[in-house]
Length: 388
Image 1: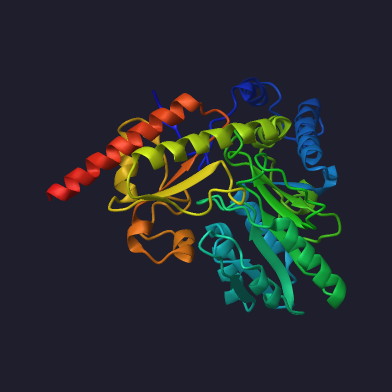
Image 2: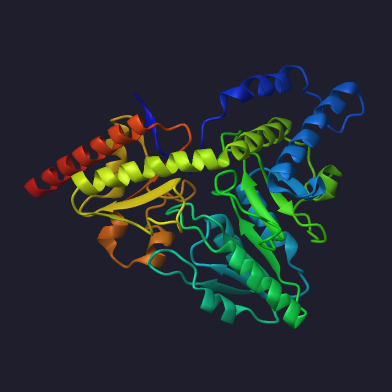
C-alpha cells in the first residue's frame, strides 16, 4: 500500500469537493464579472468562500483577499504593505520560507534595511534580539507561524503584542504579517488577539486545490497592487477569478476548522508513535527541533547519521512511502536546508535529514508500517556503506 507522508508539500483534494468542482466546470462555469445568470451564480461561490474563511478566522468578510497561493500572498503582503517612498526596516527571521526570504532580499536591493532575527537550536526565535531590532524606521515585520521544514511554532501572539506596544509607545505604524500557510486549519491562531495585520494561507495544504490561497488584510491596512487590470478583488488583485480554487479553499477551510482539535489530537498520536518506534528500533538518529508543545505535531524532521537524506527518500519511495528532504519549494536545489543550517553546523546531521509530515488521513497502522520500513532501510543502507 502507498503511505503518503509529505502532507506539508501538498495534500490530496477532499473527496467531498469532487461534485463541487465538476459543477463549476460544467454547469456554473460563468465569469463572475458577467451580469447574466451564469456570472451571478459563479459570484455566489466567491461570496460563500469568503464567508467560510472569515467565519473560521472570526474576521470580517471584507478582510479576505484571494490569491493564487501562499507564495503570492506572502509577496503581496511584503511588497504591497510598505510605503515605497520610505525605505525603512523590514524585520524577518533566518528561518522563513523562500517566498519571504527572497522577497525581503529583493526589497533590500531597492533600499530597504533587511534585518534577520536568529533562532536557537530548537528553531525558536530570539525575542530579545527581535525587541532590540525594532526601531522608529521599521515598517514591516514578517514572521512564519509554523516552520515548513521542522514544524517549530513561533510565539506569534507574543510578537504581535510587542509590536502593538512599540507602535503605541513610539507613534509608529509597523505592519505585522504572518505566514500561516503550514498552520492554517491545523493549529488555531487568534488573528485579533495576536494583533496580526496580514496573514497568508493556502488551499492545497488543507486538502483544497493547488493554485489557490488568500491573504487576511485587517481593515485599515492599505495595499499597493502587484499587477494592474480590472476591478476584481477591490482592484487589488485583478484578473478573472479562479472560481474552482476559490470555492475549493472555502470548502477546505470549513472542513479543516470544523474538527481542528480532533485532527490535532490524531496527528499527535501518529507523531508520538513514530518517534517512539524510531527511538526503540533505529540507532543514531536525532529529531531536528523540539518534541514538545513548541512544534507542530504535523511535522517531524529527523536525521540519520551516515545516510544521505536524498538516498533514504528514494529508498523509501521504492517501498511506496513518500517523504521529503525539506521544503518542496527548495528540495531540488543541491544545497543544505537554510532552516537546518540556521540551527546546526554539523554537515552529517544536515546531510541525513528527512521531513515526515502527517495528516488527518493517515492511520496508526500506516505509521507503524512506515516506521518499521524506515528502520529496516536505514540499517540496510548503513551495512552497504560499511562494506565499501
